[in-house]
Image 1 (spheres, rainbow, N blue to C red):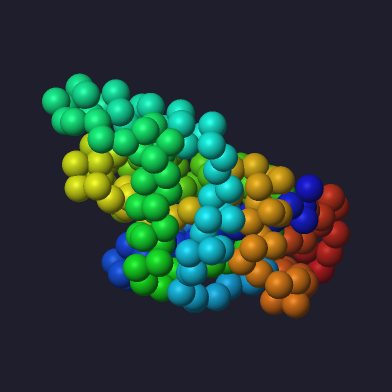
Image 2: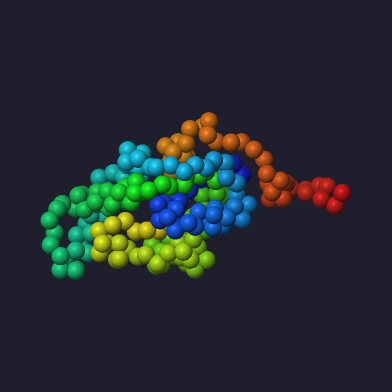
Length: 197
């Protein structure tokens, strides 16, 4: 469990707002360890693989988009699947608009801890004290009215299996560094022998 890994990506809005250090600091203060980090320009092919959505997801999200359009008195010009794909297209356009910071975090329950720190996907409903809740005021409704992706600063993996799949898309094993932190003895050593020596 102490070797559990998760992927974190600081999105272009986080980079442009110069809060990279604040985001990384919040994660490091938990005791989790960064084992690889890089600034990159994400490419479209990697992002389609990263989001890994199927037709049922596109139809489900597209159906919601159609209902929302009807409620706003807007015309419906496409099939549900295309509205669903538009959601991903907007995310990919956003994620390729500038540099991102991708990094791997390791430690006990890293997936769950990072998800808790990052907060819910929509900043408006994200709790105070989370990265999204504290650093941005974007909402789904504002993003939808502008036909763009919600600017929520950070991507983090939802579960361990997703984290491992995503990590393999963004990093080669040769880029991952195995090392020890003194911090890990405090967090994981059962006895803490020798502290008072």
